[in-house]
Image (cartoon, rainbow, N blue to C red; front, side, top):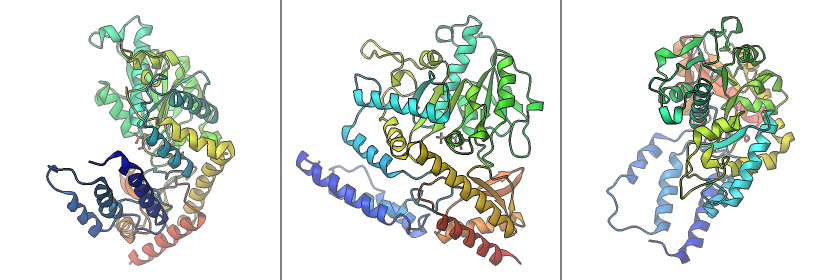
Length: 454
Ligand SMILES: Cc1ncc(COP(=O)(O)O)c(C=O)c1O
């Protein structure tokens, strides 16, 4: 085992190795080679009977592990909606690791309590959400959606005089859930965990861009939760909130918004895309996607602060805290101070810097879509946000181009299925992505199309 005297040397060594990794981030293969992946087998082995020196642990982690990383922290990773990490957020994360705070409550960490309150206030202001909403910092949009939807159901049941905490669900009044036909899988997962079977979900039809069609919105009432989305995962489109939410509110339904990445459009010059989203009752969004903060930092935001605090309360005789302490606003009882890198990112970007970053990605996506169309690709979405959904001349060619692009090591992006046919999805979310990186992506795709055209 390492001694305390080793600690400084070890951390300095970790920093040296991390910096060397950063130095190569723009030039390393975006997806690791087969050889690098095969070398991971060197980690296989029995539980060590005697521990090895921490320096040796670190050396193995770096020398075997680093080559097998995906360069999602680099400039040409276009998969999923994975942002990189802004330097200020990465640096703040390092401080937080040194502090090793349990960010559950003021008693456990006054600094985390303070900074997460400030980060929450800033996020609400930047996204134009109601200022008195509760903000719980959690691990993911998935977990935060679970928190919001459990608060929603509990609040709807309370309207009928049903005490969910004491009486549970057996015999409870029926709560119906309406989801978009293009609802993200993690919202369905949260609903499944909460006991809403997929057969019970009512599906709202969507238009060809994946937006809920207001004319076909299923009937709602005061025992309904309507799940809408800001940023459909393939097209990046927004449900027409300004039409839908007033309809839902007139019926007294609860409206939840999955804004894992798209809600950040509210901080950009394209805020109009999400007009009316502020009328909802709850929202989830991630820091680790478009805000470019480290994994795993997300937010559950709830207009009725007492609804979230009631559903998530975890006070115990030995661990009491204020109603709005973080452990009483989300799933985790103990966790890192996920709001601090979010605070650091917002501090360093400021309102202007955030707008500039989101605007740049939207502009780059529009340019990419236009150039790919010119080059004969089918661009299946309007590319109004940071997502570009693409097909080549045939399904076979679409597949061949994606695999060749992935194997090139120059870029990485993933597959999807849109309207029952394969496509690929290019997502621009990294603060490191320059216009030159976009040109390189375009040239590569054009060249691969040429090579695969018979
Ligand atoms: C639209 C949307 N909702 C929800 C999620 C889930 O987010 P998380 O991975 O933070 O749970 C994602 C992405 O993964 C997403 O793109």
